[in-house]
Length: 566
Image (cartoon, rainbow, N blue to C red; front, side):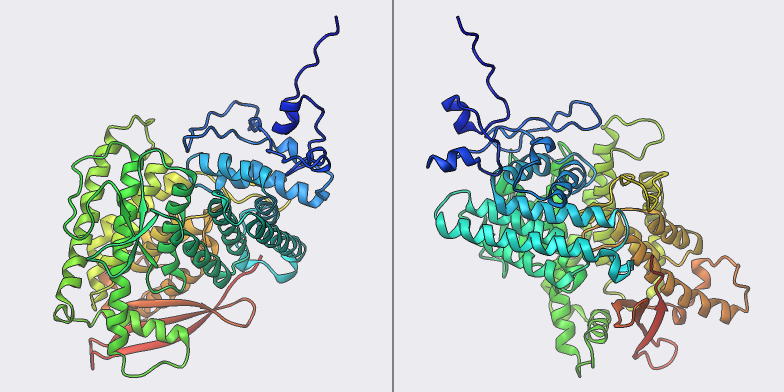
């Protein structure tokens, strides 16, 4: 009797059902295409990470397994493309989600990359560009250093668009189209961020948000809200719902890089909506805490956007360039009176209070979570606390025209520095000739950088401030559009200007440590806008302060600093 042949575990589903040998061409096999059959894609096996088995949670009701990087060696991919995709599978997909292993990135995105040519080529472009940066700020690299990777990334971008358009034209009503389009948009955002293309990232973000508006049940308008609301869920989210969460958080972060306010407001289908919504007494887990924090951050940024509207209405004349206008508008918030919009200022105070309430019950969750001695908590918990501190400080420091009021937050600044010091630990930048990055080098959403940046900008206690700047220099991971080494150079420039004014007034030596009580109001900037210039290696600081000592009028000054390139 003939021995039965072992069934292939790497062939496409169609060939395996037919019990024929598959040529394993991806994303669809040639054997199926040549016979006019539909290729149903591949069952993919687990990625080998450090030769250990990794168990990942399911993110939807349908089982999703993790693709193998060994399967990318297709005759349809060039060696450079294979290299880019392998890097994406082994590093980018692990780092993109932040401090915890992301089932979304390592399962759904990788599986779609094996099934959809548009996702595959977008992932190749991201992997190639990520491999080229390897923890170095793209803004600090000389133009020629990224040229070859930029060329490959652009070629993959064009291929991805072509394949996506073809799919949408030929399968216009396919139920998975929105999910595929959102993943491609997300990868394009990733690609633009790695190239420091802020405008490009914002364009793809807007495209993704438009796709979300066309998905039934994900977007709705609430009667007491002037904004459309994105619905998020805590209970076993599907792939689309995971994407909704990510796009909602990117929508919030876009306000740090040119957008006045988020397009959408985040709400939960399970909870109340609006300023009267009740807050929980405890959190069941970090996921529940994150959902509430996202909604509070969304509310905070919508409030700040409305404050900017009121400030703009009060501006008597337009400034000659965007950086000056932006600085004037942010400084103008500090002169707004509550009678201009009583409900807005009431909501502002409520969100500040809610953020402090979130922090208090989150500390209870931390106390209930087993951690090793000396640790500040699980990495995901640390980042959540830092994000809450950043959201609170951004809101609490934006509407007082006296900067000395920031000194009351020195304990918070110290807490931020302590958390970041432990989180970063002994992580160092990878040597230029290292074959692999040391630790995470890029994650899509902000983690600790905004909190460190605000500490370096608003804390006038010299030792805390300088440690915050030092930690920004040490931290090897770009978070979205936040480049730590670039931000460090900017805030070091601001710190230098303020401390120079203090030492000049005191007649003190340069090495003298400065306490916040030494920094008089005339030496403090209330608002600073960081801007790039056309000249390589130069940065611009547009600084604002109120002349409380004389006319109380707003004073805007321009300063240019040297940016060290690598």
